[in-house]
Image (cartoon, rainbow, N blue to C red; front, side):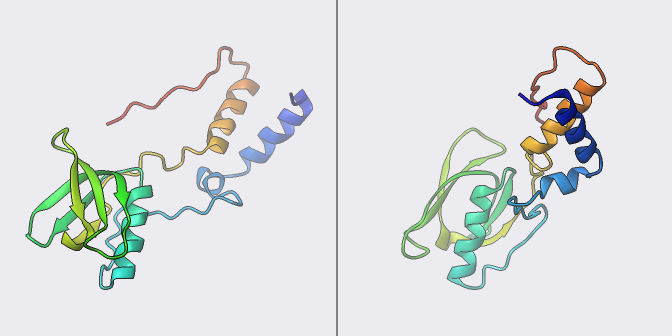
Length: 148
């Protein structure tokens, strides 16, 4: 356990940093993908964009080559040797089914949903915790944010 003096120094360090700075502490490379519409001009760009979509913690919109749009959360992907034997698995936001869509069927990708984990690093939580503790609050714990 840290001493009270160590905690006080850590609180002072964290107070000097904004939430954005805390989110990007050394070793935490994180892209802001909200609103991004990547180019899917090559197979390599498609693989890279769909890998980022898999790691994204919000909804995306896939426009299929048939013209159909699927908005939802990508929860799995199967990467093969080409676009036709690779697929994403998505839960559409309007229903509770799971769809499997081959990469080769995807014409466009857009990161349309809010990244629900943006700004919620452990360091950001520690900053809030230490501020509450310094203010004398008791029974401080981790509370989940209400989802939209």
